[in-house]
Picture: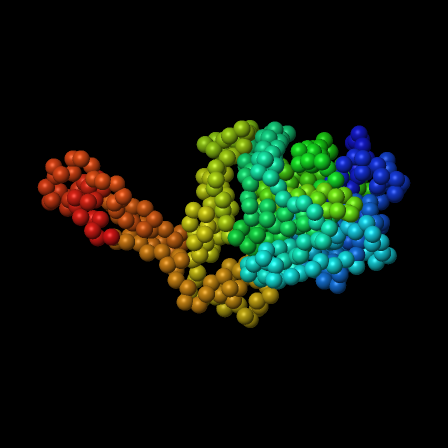
Length: 473
């Protein structure tokens, strides 16, 4: 078993070294790699740092049903919901919106023998609790900020530093990665991350879905507290690389007394090849244990501890889109569950969406016969396939919805229902098969007789005004 320079202090909520010393003095058994299993120390909620037990409200009662395997948002494989279709056992649920993860708020003035007695105030009237978030039970955006919140927000310079450090580290990952995306900042992720930071909590939130990215898009999350700046936080997350081993089951080299997710989870999320969006939040909370709280949300979230990327020559998977050792698709973002392809830098959309960013809704004529019989509306939140098969029941489509958002193809163009794109005939082109009338005709157009417009579509293309194509629009 490998030896490490310092003890594997529980790391799901990262704190500076100076604070670890204090925490270890509270629980001496944590020293020298002899870290007790969190569920043995703090009960079934599996707290990730050595601090006083927290309180939980009744709305988190069912968390106690989970086994002791939930530290970085991973549900135990023996959980009953696997059989109900909530999760696939072969997929790591890294802090997704569907997981029942422990969450609470540290209050230095409140100690209790009941580790579940902490409450969060859900307020549907909050400005941040818009209609899209109200549809998702207990969403972070519908939480009231903590009263001890003093300062919050991430400056433009910090945003740039966060993105720069993530990309700098991703471009130097070892072993070399052949298929790792460049990250970019996403305001939607940042808004939710900021709202959670405003809770002054050392735990992960239980519902941080970004609806426009897709209700079932995995959202990863890294947390830290007590650091002086973002640079220190991100560099600390990255230090887990000295422990991680590519392609090897972590349980074979990380002691049982530690936890895999706590020990290497932050680093692996930072290196996950498919992640290309990041958004973060910061809060300074008076009279709290750590004062400074850092939250970063990632999309899509981590799915594999052993193979977060493919080993190979850098950019081998994207030779035409390579920049600084990473696959860089510029500003391309895929919404509504779409997947960004490294090979083409295009969005691969799900059955219900089309368009360059998967923003065009293309509804079927009716729901699947199982909708309302085998599947009920409650299944829309937890089963991705129900959203696809039952878009009307799940309120994705409205009765009488027009195909492809009402897109019309002019001048004989044909609408392809599978892609919601127009197939145009020359000289017409563009999204709706229109002539290019924004620019004047070529100078030579006046030389051609009118009859030429009917003979050659190249002349029609160069001379749309002369050939009276623009008057047709």
